[in-house]
Image (tube, rainbow, N blue to C red; front, side, top):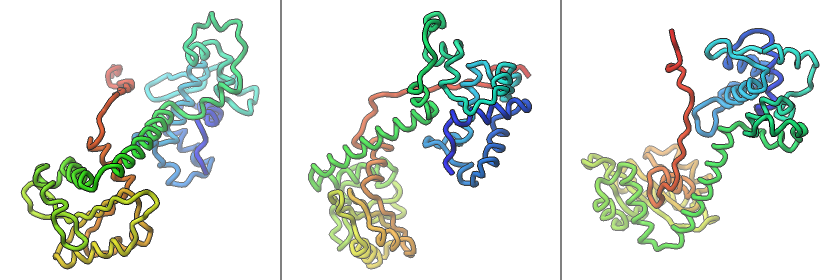
Length: 308
C-alpha cells in the first residue's frame, strides 16, 4: 500500500509518543507493522536516495507537532508527547494535520513566518492551507528537481535532433571522454564515425592506455521511432565478426522490448543507451549543459552539540 503522507502520520506518531519516550526508527517499525508494509515499501527511498521515505515523513510529522507544542525532545534523537499533546489525544481527534496545528499561535508564527501579534485577529487556517502541504520539504525539493531535469532532458534531445549527424558523433565522443573513456577528445573523435565496419560506427578505448576497446553504434532517431531487435542484432553480429566483447548502442529515441530482452543473454557485454539516459548522462557529466544556480542545504550537526 502507498505510504501515508506526513499529515496522515501525525496522529499515530503522537499516539506512540504518548505511550513512551521513543525514536523515529522505532515508530517507523511499529507503523510499518500496523500498515502491513512490505519490505520493499519499508525500504523505499526519497528520489534523492538519501533517506527512507517513511522515516522522512515521520520526522516531519514529529517536527511540525513539536512546533505546535504537542511533542518535546528530552534527549538527542528521542521524543515524547507533551501535556498539550496528551490533552489533544484525550479529545479523540479523527485526524491531526496542518489545519489543526494552525490553531496554535506558535505554530502559525513558524509555519507562515509571521509574528503572533499579526495573527491574533485571524481565523484558523483554511482547508486550502492544509491540502497544500501534503509532501515534506525534501519531497517538494526532489519533485521540483525531477521536473527541471525532465524539461532539460526534452530540450537536450530536441537540440540534438535539430543538429547534424556530424554534431551527434562529436557529442558522443565528448560524452565518452567526459565519462572516462576514449583517451583524449581528439582520439575519441578520430575513431568515431570512421569505422565503416557494418553495424559499427566507431571504436573508443576503454581506458587511456588502450588495454581494451569498446565498439559504438549511434542512431539519431526521432521520438516514436524505436530501435528494434534487427538493428541491435546487426550490431552484435558486427561485434562477433570483429572478435569484440563490449559494445555500446546509443539512440536518441528508445529501444523496443525485444531488443532489450535480446541483449540480456549475450556472451558479449552490450549496453543500450536510449534518449532519456543519453540526456541524463549529458547532464550528469556536464556535456551540453552548464550550471546556472546552486542551492546548498544544511542540517544540524549533532556531534557539535554533544557534551558527552
